[in-house]
Picture 1 (tube, rainbow, N blue to C red):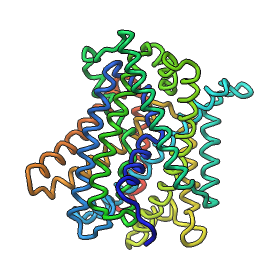
Picture 2 (cartoon, rainbow, N blue to C red; picture 1 turned 45 degrees about the vertical axis):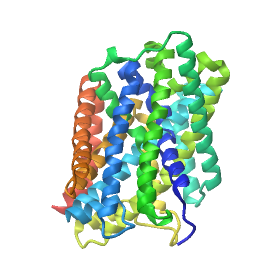
Picture 3 (cartoon, helix red, strand yellow; picture 1 turned 180 degrees about the horizontal axis):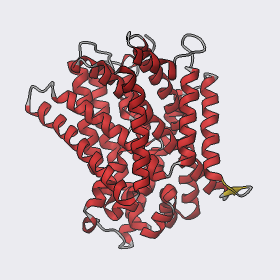
Length: 432
């Protein structure tokens, strides 16, 4: 085993995974639905993420294999390999939605910086987003990975920028008498916004996929997950307060994909707008690259596990995604190409609302399943209540997400439902 990382590095990785790009894309969608109560939506999602984090940690503690990941835990504690396979594929396609969201935000912020909206009469955002995906697929096929030190510096820079904007923006709003609690907007919009915002808390679970590279993994991961989720929730609350109090509802609705940059403008003027836009471009690019690498290898592992099970359905899945490699230890080329193609299609043709809903729904489902599995291992009040809250909260969040889509955009609901039906059918039907 190579060099291991400790608690500070683990927190940095988890925070970087969450803040990696999601907040730049999802903030405007959440704010448009919850208005000045958006901060409450992030608090609710953060609490649900903490419940899920506890459940992940609980299964690590209970597992016979100290280095097993969440997909292995589902198989170990339920005895159902098919369920573990479904969780693995939902993870993979959840990352497709996340990458599509990153690419969407990358294209939106990049075009804001250069002041271009179309190229030869064709909308530029879908084109730029798809080109970005293709570029990172190419880099990963060649085996390129960002330097660890550069990633750490980027995490520190983007978190620092968001903290400065958040704290300064709250102070500015207070001195201008522009702050409100948003409690008068509490209602169904906050609940649906909490469900939509859940994808912004995706990222900490990556620690559980790489336990062998972490020093004293059980204790370090436990502390790192709790610390990173709590810190990220506070950060999101700050930027949500600033955005919803310094921008009008009309501005947020018109610029949902770049709302954070517009929120920096009243305090820092054009410099702040450009700074947030640059941070967003760098963050979403970095997150897209890292997630593509992780998702491709995860899909390879799931496909390999399925391939080793002597059932036709498993072999068929393995043949469809990620079975071929270049050489041992190198990037899984077929997985990169398939996932990259799906991501490019989704980011080019999907709306920000549909992409966010797709990704949030995936991770709500996964974290709900893991919480339910952790509930079966209860032996105390805490190990009973917290996973139960995680499972029930995830179920409620899914219902809220579907209701939001049914109420606001039935076509998006039909699209999301169709995508997930196809994903599950590809795995499930050949096994019948």
